[in-house]
Length: 527
Image (cartoon, rainbow, N blue to C red; front, side, top):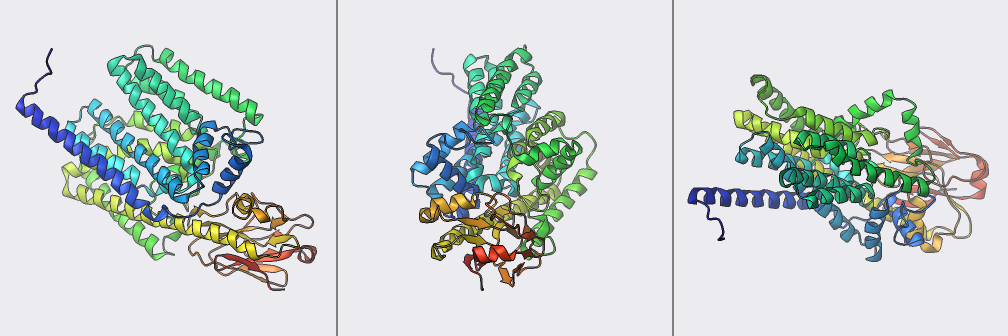
């Protein structure tokens, strides 16, 4: 049989549809790349060095795949090992992260379009809604942590696996081909063995199959639960138990905190800039002002529209958002910053679908709705540019601070009074400090090196640690000292860590060479 010949009108429509779609996809990719250009050559930070150290010691599956560890992520360890073998190039690592973010943005576009068509939208409006949603997802400042931080790549790979699985299940419902179903199962398996954020995905798959009207949804979801049980069995064998961060179990002992964390994650997901900067930092305040103007326009248009005028299945989206957030609610987010916002990366994909549909319908009914959409996207895009630059600065501080220890005395133990923990919501030495020394300064790996505390760099990158007569203070009143978590503390008398000062016991002063922090470097403290 010959190829089917389309009528002229239908052919023009198909060509237009294909052209617009390609422009949309290309624009999403270009915007994502441009938003993170500042970060591409930035050095590694925090846990990045810990990952490379574990790979250096344990080989291909050295990270989160061999005891002792609190996690089981063999596939992402394999992925990280490629970066390690290629010489630990920040440029390569960040390009790969941007690639995965772009893939997730394009998957959001495809998922949104297919859902909207299913909800009865005209294909042209569905295209623009999918484009708006995918663009919002791509430039969402809350997603910067997952993209700009090499160590957070696992969140993007897991999200790509989950979204691909849902799209393949939709195609399976239409085609009935076993290959589509098996492909969905494979995508979920890869994502789960990259990060445990997909622990609840079998429930999402079951809900998805039921929503699609697939017969025997329960039986078809059973293999997803089977993969989950296999994962849990292997994790238990490697970790020696359930694993996870220690503070996670503290959250489970206070169930009401799960609800608090849920609202904190949802609030943090929509932030255009860190909340702590509102009224304290000119750029953050401006971004919040633009965002609030857009939100106000949205409210005005929404109140003027008749009830039940939005043809979306809010229950489905709400259900998958809650299920996507459920595994991470035990981890405390920061509603003042974007710290831990990587945990909401998967949930933000489903939120973006709803936001794209909502804003498109507002814009279709009112010019003010289009203005509101533009204001929100501008605020988010500018916020992403700013936050990506913050991560670049954090990387510079991390590398410079470690390399400055090269000139410290080698004949006696060193005591760093305080290491910078984070800058403007980007990690510096949240963890991985000692591994960073081992990776960047291997000649110092065996020298006794201890840390007395950590400190914040909330708004400025030039905060210094001042020291005199056994007491350390911070040059910036906005910053505080933090407990010395994730670092080796000195033996003997413990330092007294208060928000506004650090008191060092005389015995520690006598036994160690004190190191303070100034101008982004560690320097010898004045005697």
